[in-house]
Amino acid sequence: MRILVLCQDIADYSIIKQVLEHNGHEVVVVDNTEIAWDFLDGGQTRLAILDWPVKDRGTKGLIERIRSAKFASSTYIIVIANKGQDSEIAAVMKAGANDYLPRPISPQELKVRVGLGERILALEQDLSKTRDEFEHHGVYDGLTGLMNSRAFYKYAHGELERARRISSSISLIAIDIDNFKAINKQYGRNIGDEVIKAVAESICEKNRPYDEVGRWSGDEFMVILPGVVGNDAEKIAERILNGVRTVDVAAGEGQHVDVQVSAGIASVYRVSASIELLDLLIQQADEALSRAKRAGGNQVQVTLS
Image (tube, rainbow, N blue to C red; front, top):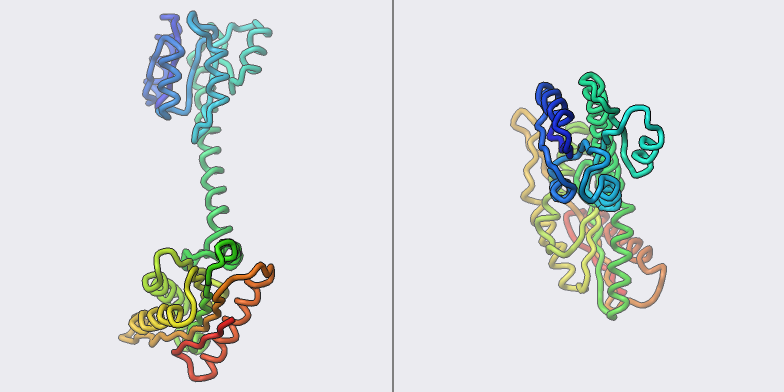
């Protein structure tokens, strides 16, 4: 691990450098707070050992500067303080240090304090990673990587409000895999999952870059189309259906799954201020989708408002 050491005492510096390098750390030694700040501000280390006080601007000001900065990762600060000086140690901790290293410096204690800092930083990194994963799963579907239904609903509501402000049009496409239950029954759920992923990828490839796709539920998807109605929305849906027809999912032993989808479109030529309009669009798109299914599937049905 790379460790910053701000120390002006030659004896202390020698002990710290020798112990840390012996334990496999890279030691960067500086002799004033401005250089230390530049190093930390550049994100070149997350652990610093600082003398208290130093002769220039002072360690206290440097720590306060670090704590007020919005670094992407936290900085673990160990301050060298005189052993037995309770007031000095209290000042060190109040300034924002994580730990202190008593002087005269004991090599064993130095190893312990640095080891504790490493463990805490590693724990913070693991927690941050876990939090990011939770946030990701709160928005995106784990199987397809598309927005989940809750996130898509929120996004679509925002698009609807934007269309209302500018008196624009909007369409919603509901897409469902034909005979998906039969696919699951014949080939198993693992192949069914592969079909869902392949269809999701095909939908994303065939829609416009600024249209958003979400996995609504099971094998159903939703696509929001800002500024599109009628024939234009139907053309996009037909392009999606044509793309899905080329999807090739291997099912083992030379078998391939024949994948087709149906689509239902709900369109509004001019969005009004209706708060319940999104729910109405979803209902109308689903009704159009059901008509497409009843008509034999592998086709598009449209509802206009």
